Image (cartoon, rainbow, N blue to C red; front, side):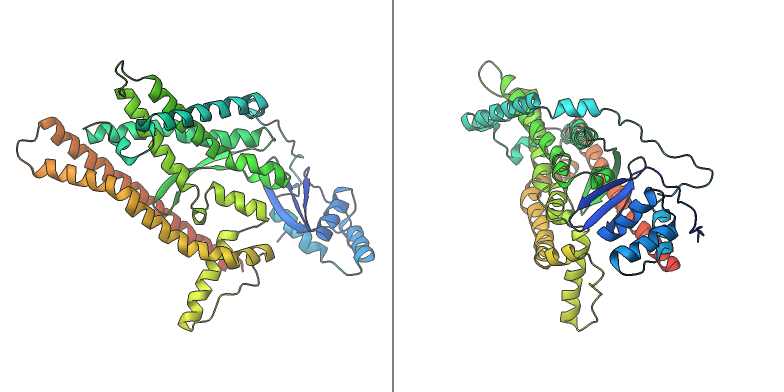
Length: 401
């Protein structure tokens, strides 16, 4: 444990302070390390920033609030967050965030007018042209399953990066750095943009970076729909590229629907948590759900007192959405995904067991099946990796405490 000289000023990195109700977020924007402090604790840290020694700050705290403070414990917390400079470390300087100008342009008033125009165009086209409306039949734009599989996969890549880029650029226009990583939600493999620095941004300014990816999805669907309508044949029928674009649009629409499965910690979940001022709503809801089952089984309950007060209050009703939500996800998959999955499986088996199947279709089914199995293997690997990390973190927590 680091020892501190209570009679010398503490060498702190440049810190940001953001007041949010009775709590203050303090941290470093250059490394995205933040902690949440009570108001009086933040006042103590401000005294340290102003040059008070820890002993002077503790004496001021006692005079101001009428109670003693364990200033060494506060210093240990600051050190754990890497807010205190080491003896051989220079003071951090926050470098300008790249692409902040592009982010500002992407969400300017002119851009919003263009976005609204594109969405309105697509909606009007769907109203007047029935073949542009989303349906699972759009997925089967080709008789070859590998073409469908590879085509939708390749088309999804730029759309997914567009989704994450909108998140990142909406944050970067505010000076918030971002990182891209791969994760999993239930049976979905997802890309995630980490915007840790949003905790140091006023709450009202966090909403757009959170939902910007959803905006990108809607714009992608609209663009695909409009392009499909513009590429019709002379007789008014959809062209091959048009059918492909509608398949891409339907796949993107499923991702939009998925965003409303709040219990999977999607963008909409993050928005709800931010609006309500929660810290870990998902974790609190899971603990409350587990305790309900423990009560029914007559087993001792897990302690809920350590949960953040806002999390505990909101999770009382939100926890029911966790149970209903997981059921709804599996039901949605069965009702919406089953027809597509059934058609693929019966088609592949029919080709592999049928007589007189063209060689091209036979090879198509074999490759399609192999790729599908590989995707399942990747999902399984992500599940195992998460469990290994969780087990390691539990062991580390046990050693520390």
